[in-house]
Amino acid sequence: MIIIRDLGLQDYDVTWQAMQRFTQARNIDAKDELWIVEHPPVYTLGLNGKREHLLTIGTIPIINSDRGGQVTYHGPGQVIVYILLDIKRLSLGIRQLVTILEQAMISVLAQYGISAVSKLDAPGVYVNEKKIGSIGLRIKKNCSYHGLSLNNDMDLRPFDLINTCGYSGLKVTQLSDLGVTVSSKQLADSVTQAIKSVLLT
Image (tube, rainbow, N blue to C red; front, side, top):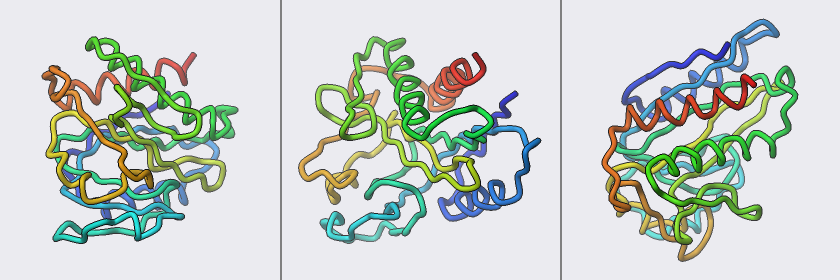
């Protein structure tokens, strides 16, 4: 059984600390959970994130996170699903989990007529060489937290002020720019169901 929680709009810090507490407190019997959330505008740097990838420092807060990966942007209109799983119990490796999350986004995008791909050397999901979905995870006590973000209908301009995911010149896109109109709730529900369908088989 996987519990899905819709947390609405929450500050990044609040959700991050809640994920840490959840992971620290969980035991072998704790159920796995997927958290759906949106964040107010924020840049986050992964554990190995280099501040040089912040090209212009404006008014958007910058948070040093404990996830993997470099710098990314979160904001309203972006679907975020945090993945709180006991990967040992599920017999999953980290790369397997990344692939599951990538394929979940790819399959959901296909439902809307969007052809997307993943890349072995650059985790995430891409449409016409532009990034539409990102993944950043942390593993502690054989359990995962953090997760994925999928650009739905948001202001993409803050991405112009960073080297997204540490790649100079990498452009981003979103469903609304690809001619798809869908609520973030509906999109998040589709993504979580796609993840669940793989994990529970």
